[in-house]
View 1 (tube, rainbow, N blue to C red):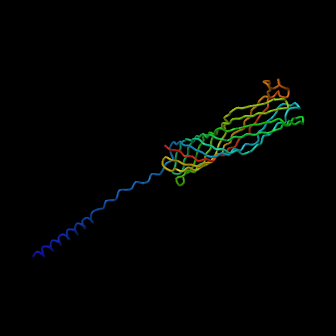
View 2: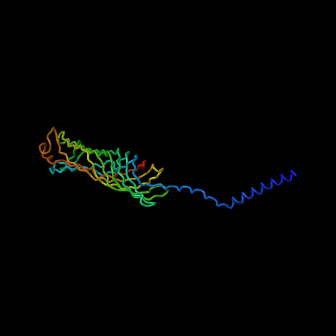
View 3: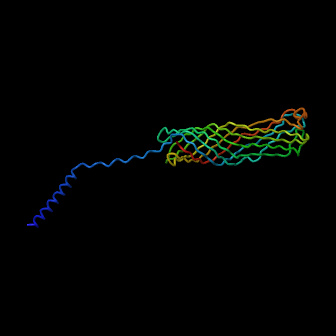
Length: 274
């Protein structure tokens, strides 16, 4: 009798388990919770950062002109020197980007770079308008760029989380100018001028900026600056006596001209986007 009771109990348990599984199979399944869609990075926002790089400055000939017309005055001189000067640049930049479509960004940026572009030129010997030649006369001129600044617009498109852009706008250059002429045929006469000037020009360029994270931007860019020429005049003096009071041939001040400069900059930069 007991074996039959045991077999019956096992049968009831099996039937109950099968029915439970069948009932569970008939119940509707719950859908898994949807996974959060990845948020596409945005370029919109303010940013500030720092940059460093190298610069190459190309400056055409400088000139010295004696406007006096007496036979003993000079014919003038050209100071060519080296046409290309290289140096370092470093500074800070800041701006704002607006991503106005899924793949396009427009923005505005301002920057300032300290530079080490120095240009010094010297010639010995000056020819006179009467055919003479003063071998002891010298002329030296300098134009040292101290900083560059710009305010530029930027327009670019996004590819592989990288902004490929063009840029352009207004530029400024601070230059320390100096000129010293020694004219020994008049004794110890000298004409000298030294001053600083902020020159305004323009700049264009292009670059690529990678959004390393939602807040960190890394870029490499090229900029081309064009800054106009500068002219100064200085009287010839000796012992505190200048111009016509010194000699008839020095009545008009001498003229010095630094030609317009072309500066190419290649730099890398890192910025923090707020």
